[in-house]
Image 1 (cartoon, chains in turn cyan, purple):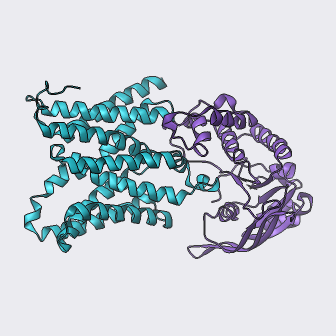
Image 2 (spheres, rainbow over the protein chains, first blue to last red):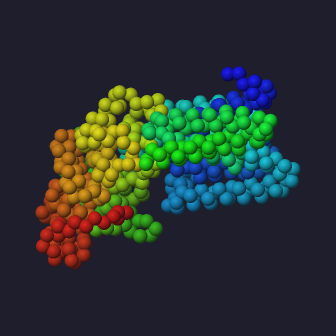
Amino acid sequence: MNLSGLAGFENTFMQLALAGLLLLAPIVAIMGVHAVQMRMAFFSDAISHSVFAGVAISLLFNVHPQWTMPLFGLLIGIAIMAIRRASTLSTDTVIAVTFSAVVAFGLAIISRNPGITRELPRFLYGDILTVDTAGLIRLAVCLVGVIVLQVIGGNRLLYIGISPVLAAAHGIAVRRYQYLYAALLALVIINALWAVGVLLVTALLVVPAAAARNLAASTRGLFWWSFAISASSSVIGLVLSAQPWARTASGPTILLCAFTWFLFSLAANRSRIH
Amino acid sequence: MTDTCVNFDRVNVTRNGITILESVSASVPRGSCTAVVGPNGAGKTTLLLALLGQIPYRGTIRLEAPGSNTMPRIGYVPQRLPVDRGMPITVLDLMVMGHARRPLWCGISRIHRDRALHWLSCVHASTLAKRALGVLSGGEWQRILLALALQQEPDLLLLDEPAAGIDLRGEHLLCELMESLRERHGFTQLMVSHDLATVTHHASHVILLNRSVIAAGKPADVLVPHFLSIAFGLHMGVAAAPWLHTSREGSDR
């Protein structure tokens, strides 16, 4: 594919960004379908917001946030899953409580270091054009993780999404797959933050899957639609954002493309029902 | 080899300080159709969930597989599932997802498709294979969940309120279906019900429950005015034929 004819693509950082987005598309497509089916959109919000605490810890212990962010995200993901499994509180209450505690802790520590507050917008909004080779490698590792989990337990996750009690009664190791999924989702979200930031990363995960839900007629279609929407929105969004007349931020532009897909899917779904 | 499939021994369940089950001791004969009967709030569903290991309990619940030390295979038919109506998961997808490793987005192999269709045909639901879960009626759901449980080739089939949410004719068909399937596959059936009509017609063993076991044995010995009045309250004992009472109340969970 020769994209260098289009404005912006002669730059290496644009090519890296495109490579990153194309790695990210299958990851968010698959993980997003499970997130929507298992009703875990809010869960992913809590994990993305845990980066504030991840940054705070890196300040406290003087470690690079590249390590504390994924580790803390993982910890929060597993902790929420554990509370959710053990508690009689409804899940959204559990998440809201954890979520706010983590954000408050992060902001409290960060506010003591005025230097770092300049860095915050980078986490809040992300910047696709800052992806480097190391970031691409991390995404590739995530993709391998997602594929491996699909092969060993993708269908089992769908079964758990239907009903954990039914799945357990029928011999599925529910706990194992729930934790594996939560851990992998945490790593995916932290590694996707560079693209769209804390505010929009859940949308990156959920919008393609939600649109696919309206368009597909089977589980198979659900995954492929989700991938098609995710990949096409990424490419179109990136290209649009680089055009001289647009000059918009890439992340939000990509999500607007995905949201356009969603509106289309709503209309298509209505016409299918009536 | 014993002739018991499940044995409850002094099972206690307490939640938030409220005793739901108190020293429940009962057994389920192998090959029987056993019904756990009791009013709403008697702890019937709780007993099933304890058996499934889904809630903590004190006491012992022993499951015995025929002739070996392995755990018996369980098939579970829940009362109802909160299904996302817009999710395009088909009946066939649901039947396959617990068995096939190959992700559904890579397609369904012929072996798994045939296997699923076989079990669907056993519950007269072959035509529903391509239907999305969200558009199924209550009775159709019941049959799909039954096929899903039978697919486990269970030694023990658990049904939670099989009569809830379907009409009398559907209930009758379901019971007849269950009887022929039990004859063919030889599993033990344990169902929870507050519907005495179903029980008197189809169960071979009854456990009358209201927090603890009030009586257990053959339907004719258990479903007598004396025990029923203890379980359901006085008015039940007065009615000449209490099982003609066919109210359809909701869950007692």
